[in-house]
Length: 192
Image: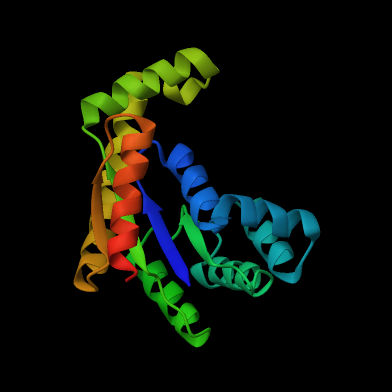
């Protein structure tokens, strides 16, 4: 089973590359935001628990999020693998995810991190803001803050997956196809 954690700062092209990876390797996309919204909408036990917390302005605890991910994995038992988007965000979450996957007889295969210079990210996001009208992509200081928060929060995860020999840095500039080719080469060499 091919289980990929895809990382990258805002504007790195995660969404674009995620779609290409899903299609090329027949992976199931696990976006924690989408899963959370889906569980709440379906009024599952975990969804109701999450909604109660969110209505109080509280963060949904890791064990609830991992439970929702586990439910999605169980409902896609025949999948070739999964692409994890937006999770894990902390080493505690990564450890919880590893333990849950181990119980299922699988593991994270690799963490792929799209690396792009901050100046290029700012340029991309400002352009995206002009095209999409997204307010959070139109203010350079907000963009810089988001990039800094990403860099600060993900550094420990890079170390976590590096210690497991699963961290792979991918140069995230160039054409969409060039970047995808770089991702595919890492996948091919890692799953031999």
